[in-house]
Length: 109
Image: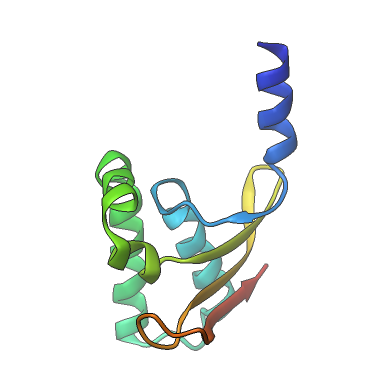
């Protein structure tokens, strides 16, 4: 039991793959803070949708498990410090099955 708690605590900081079922609300807050002056109505709507999806944890978890398209949409990494997401990068394939990848979002607090 102690090993599990220690492992969870150690994993709570640093770089890790994004987990949409846990990270959508935190990433939305980070994007809001990083790009507040640049977000138009479409960007604000996207953030609202991300926050709404973040509240649907079990449904989002199910989508993560069974939907390749969903995973490709939210593929990337987060950097966590003291339990808070302070960095995010979204990476996705340039086209389905392509060996090339595209960085489509970088946000850092």
